[in-house]
Structures are given as structure tokens and as C-alpha cells.
Amino acid sequence: MVSGLLALLLWQVLASYGPISDSTIPTAGESLVSLWGLLWEPETWASLWATMQMAVIGFVIAIAIAIPVGVLIGLSRFAYRSTKFTFDFFKVIPPIVIIPITILVFGPTIQMGVFLVAFSIVFALAIQTAYGVRDADPVLLDTMRAYGLGTVMQVRYARLPSAAPFIAVGLRISASAALIVSVVAGLLGGAPGLGRDLQLAQAGGQSARTFALVLLLGILGILVSRGITILQRRIAFWIPA
Amino acid sequence: MRIGHRLLAVLIGAWLPVLLVYLWWSASAESTNPYFPPLSRIWSRFLELWVFAEWPTHVLPSLRNLALGYAIAVVLGLVLGGLVGASRGAGRYVEPLIDFFRSIPAVATVPIFIIVFGLDASMRVAAISVGALWPILLATMQGVRATDPTLMDTVRVFGVSRTATLWRVQVPGAAPLIFSGLQIGLQIAFVVTIASEFLGSGFGIGAFTLIATDSFLILDAWTGVILMGLLGYAINIIFDGVERVSLRWYYGQKKLA
Image (cartoon, rainbow over all chains, first blue to last red; front, side, top):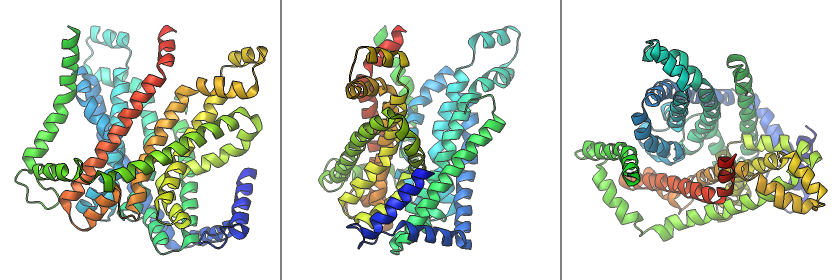
């Protein structure tokens, strides 16, 4: 708290008196006033809604695909080893590189943001799930097999519980990534939301507004990551956050 | 026998990508959809542009910015992270700030750097280095702080100076954690490199691809996307290699334990 205030003060002094005071860089005060103004504009909330919509829908689609696929891959050694390279490849490639293609195919729409969000997390989440499924206790699996319990029972009572912590970690990382990608889809691809507002503010030379939007994104990022921690403690309380 | 095993492992890993590329190739062969041109045409355009005619104009400037920005981030991250991590008081004041800066998506800070630096290369290098700095800084701080207390006591008993302790015991000891920060930093650096070119630039691979997209040069856009994907993948592979070599002592230690 103290350090935050000091940083704002330093910014204010530098932007008002230093060698950069003649430039277009806004002072901390101007930026905060602009941030306050933003909170009273209905457009800001509409943008926030669009950004969250893309993040959440993309996230849900990615989960719906990645977890079943991850479980199936994890069940077979051959499938795991066959898909590993391909999934790793797409996991490592940043989603930003396919933005030009999504601009062509989807145009600057909500769908584009949803696709980018889902694409950016589905591979990592599937790998996490498969890895967790493979990590199940072999003695437990052998015991279940000896008692004649089939694959469905094994998945339900041995594989999924073992994968749960891995999936939880994957979900946590994915949720933060979903928000970032949703903003980036707006900033670089023109999809609606806070990202596009930021791009428009910068291109229009509204520097205080640009700084205010970036501050807003930082606050949003912190709120979301706090929110995830709380949710995880509630839902998956046995997994250390 | 072992060679046979390795060959089999490569085959198992490779059949799916080969199949996917084949499917793409054959499915797009007769394609008249303007957005999905035949892969064969994308491929020949790729060879024309990127092997290696356009490297000096588009690829090398991007890589230069990336290398410079990342190098600055690594040096600053290690030095500041080491200093802040070693002092008990500083961490408490600085950590919330770092947390805040880290919460801002690195790509979203690019507009700010455009306002501050304009549209030249210094803007790109600054945005890359600041974006990549936070994970490296944080990992170094945490790693230094987590040094084994027994080791610290031993060092103190032998009268090693605080500076030597920090740079020769604590920071190297934190290497495994620091490397994970370095990897995240590198991925961010790559993303910011491309983003800074998307947002206004005449050259660089990101700029090339986005300009091609806006001008409906679909083939060129596809080659740019493929090249960026391959570069992004290659950078990670190189990093993994460097990490494996640098941390050989650590993995050896873990095996013994």
C-alpha cells in the first residue's frame, strides 16, 4: 500500500517536473482522474462484459474439449506418446501468431476472441489432464482390475481423482491466460472489449485514457487471480492453492 | 536394440504430425476458399520469402529486438531480484508493486511504450525487456530467499562476505527456479516482440504478416503465421537445450538423492 502510493508520487513528480514533463506522458493524477471517469462510462462496463464473455466462453469450450481428450489420451500409452509432440508444439506456440488468420476467418468479432482463448489453453490443459490420468496409483489400478472393475470404474474412482490436482493447476493457469488472451484479441485483432478500447485510445492520442485502461487491466488481473484462489479453496479445498 | 527403441519412439511421436500435414495438404489441394489456399502454394511462397530472401528485412530486425530486450530483462531481473531477495525489508515493500505490474498483460503495456517512446526500435526493446522482467525478477527473489538455511549458516561460519554469498551461493542455488522464470520471460519476450510489430511498424515479421492480412495477400499472411509459429517453437527448444546443459549438475544431484 505504502509502496504503491510512493510509486504514484514518483510518477507524478517525474511526469510534472522532470525532463519528460514536456512529452505526451500523462501524470499519475491525470491518469487516475481518467480511470475514475472510465468507471462511470457505461461503455467501459460493456467492454468489460465483452472481454469477460470471450474469456469465459473460450475457457469453458477448452475445458469441454481438453478434459475428455486428455483422459482418453492418458488411458493409452500409445495415444499419449503419439500425441505428445503435436500437443506440445501447439501448446508452446503463442496464440498471438494465429491472430492474422483469425482476422481473416472471423473478422473482429466475439467469436474470434472465443476461438483464440480456447485455442490458447486447450492443448496445455489436455496435456495436464493426460499426465494426471497416467499418474494414477498402479497398485490401486491393479487391485481394481483384479476385482473385475472396468475402465469406466477405473476412470471414475482412480484416474480422475489422481488427475484432479493436475487439472486444478491447469485450470488455474488457463483462467489467467484466458483473460490475457481475451484482452489481446481486442488489442491486436480488433475484437470487442477492453483490448480494443485500449488500442483506440492509443491510436487516438488519448494518453491519459490509455494509461487509465492499462491500470484498469492490472486491477482486473489481480481481482481475477485472487478470485481464482478463493474459488479453488472453496471447490477443491484439499488441493493446496 | 537401443537404436531400435529410439527409432520406434521417434516414429510414434512423428506419425500424427505427418498425417495432419498430409491431410491439410490433400484437403486444401483443390481449395477455392480464399482464406484457406492450397498448402502447396503456401509452401512454395514460404520458400520464396523465408528461405532466406526476406530475413534481412523482416526476420533479423525482430530477432535483434527480441535478443536485446531479453538480455536487458535477464541482467536486470537477476541483479535486482538478487538484491531485493537478499534484503528482508525491501521485499515487503516491493513485492506488492511487482505483483501489480505482473498482473498487467505484457502485450497491453505496448500502447504505453508507444506513447512514451514513439514507434521506433527503442519502444520495442523497452516493451520486451519490461514485459520479460517481472517473471525473472520474481523467480530470482523467491529462489534467493528459499536458500537452504543450513547452507547459509555454513557460509556464515566460514566468514564468506555477504556479496559473495549472494552471487556465488544464493543465486546459483536458486538456478532451477530462476530458469523457470527465464523461460516464462522468454515466451513473453517473443509475444511482445510480435505484438509491438502488430501495433504499428513497417518491418519485422509481425508487421509483415499483419500488413499482408490487411491487404488480403492471404498466401503471404499464411507464410508469416507459419514462420512465427516455427520461430516460437524453435526458441523454446533452444531454451530447453540451454537449460538442460546449464542445470546438468542439478539433475545429477537429484538423481543421486
